[in-house]
Length: 437
Image 1 (cartoon, rainbow, N blue to C red):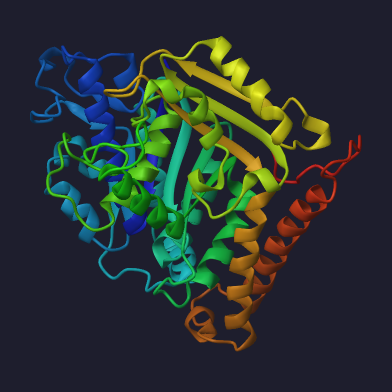
Image 2 (cartoon, rainbow, N blue to C red):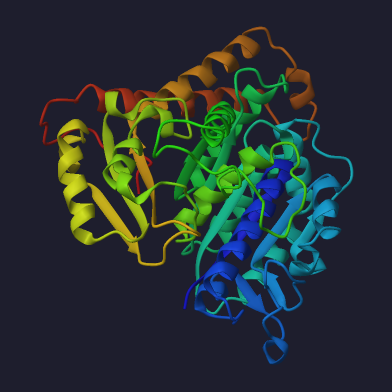
């Protein structure tokens, strides 16, 4: 049996992580009616007292007594972590899993990465090692963080580099929440691009999510929950955006958006909940590739695919999977050197209350539009030297960090553009993306 450890850094990372643990317990309690500690639960939870484990140990309606999440919670402000420790999930964590401060990073990547990264380096490594020691076969670290703030972007990417240093053989999958253009953190373009260079260097896989896309999706789902065409209505209590039926009570700001990201992680680990009527199976596959169903604002069909993974749950046959891939392939341009770049996963256990669900994970050149927009916002600030002094007064931070980060991003954009230029042509020696692994 393999295990994964979730590392949640900063306010956003911990809020999304909180939704993930709640939804995971809700999902498992629905499937495992007897409340037994099984292999599925063991992937993300450890049982600290198996002799006392009973039906109430982790039931959604009951009190969590014996489970501990395989998690590390880091934040340089105490607010969100303290809220978790005072809420219904409090018994899932202990002091060896937590690392907090009180002052915060002031929306400054340099403070998070260099000041706190240096001050807490040994404690971070020790906390990560303890989490790993509780695993029999550690398969993966899931890092959750935001790109716009100081702790999430700065300390989050510092933790990422420490993961590579301490556990080089363990896969590092990062869920990064990108700020919208209307973000109220004026320095978010600096933080995002400085963080992106670290992601390029140290992550095995990055799942980018844009705040504005989350806002748009929540609005669409709420509209559909109040009516719509037959076969498209989504129930208001759907776990896609609602915590109803879980341990956590009244909905708080951003819960609906955070639930979408939590469901992304649950789908990757074969636990999710999507309200899609079974008669719309083929439509579900089509929707997965449309611009309305992406977690970044982009249209993948107008760009080039490098690879695509389809992760399906529930009442779906292999023949259904193959049929839809063959049906969609003509409309999905793939890079010449990976024309058969499909990976599939099929889990027979259906999502809660529904027959099936689908998650499409793709590396597509359409992501360059998000990066180009971010670069433009960065350049507007950097050209005026706006707010640079807040970064340059931090010990270890130099002007060169900005130019190197910008150069790294420009190279990444250029690589995607070179790939796009090969669209429609079978070029045997077409350029491969440098960070593709």
